[in-house]
Amino acid sequence: QSVLTQPPSVSGAPGQKVTISCSGNNSNIGNNYVSWYQQLPGTAPKVLIYDDTERPSGIPDRFSGSKSGTLATLGITGLQTGDEADYYCGTWDSSLSVGVFGGGTKVTVL
Amino acid sequence: QVQLKQSGAEVKKPGASVRVSCETSGYRISSYGIAWVRQAPGQGLEWMGGISAVNRSTNYAQNLQDRVTMTTDTSTNTAYMELRSLRSDDTALYFCARLFEAYYFGSGTYSQAFDIWGQGTMVTVSS
Image 1: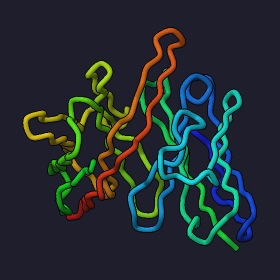
Image 2 (image 1 turned 90 degrees about the vertical axis):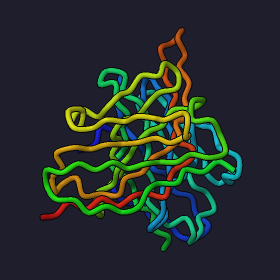
Image 3 (image 1 turned 135 degrees about the horizontal axis):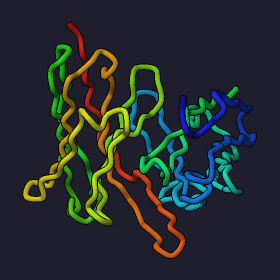
Image 4 (image 1 turned 180 degrees about the horizontal axis):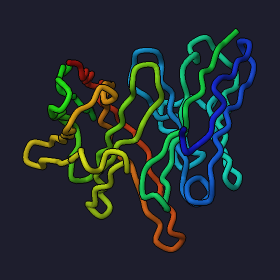
């Protein structure tokens, strides 16, 4: 049982937009910054978003992050077959003094 | 080029210990924190713990804190994770990751992101 809640899967057709939600509470998402990671099959995760909305250099602007209260969201526009992967949200939990991840969301391109 | 290179796969018996190394290059290990994340077969990411560069404190996941120790050697720019009293459910792919972090004292807000990852080390616990 993960501290952060993500949908197990989302899907979309090529070119469409999908969103992935990440729900927490005031001890984690509500008071700390959220990051998002993409894990392609058989590889290490890669950071897509940090500080709720910021993209590292080299990450296309098709990927975006937002946050409202205790809910963070990752958006992927112009969906491509290469976007098929598992996506994880992560943050710090101030009450538990630990890092926490969501359970992960599998993105399928139809 | 910033890289994290981990030690090779390990096979251990229940009750044994394992130490995984994470050699960093392209930056000074003392300038950033290091986190450890593991992933059991077919499962999601699990934060194990980390060493913060902000205050040099070490935090561990509550379910591991009695069995895990994380250290860094600044002379060799290498981080280590030791896990003791291994059980079958410790079988997983273990990752080290550079910790990109900031703490905002005014708001009490903490920012952390794992910006560079090692390739992973498979640890198998089997009798």
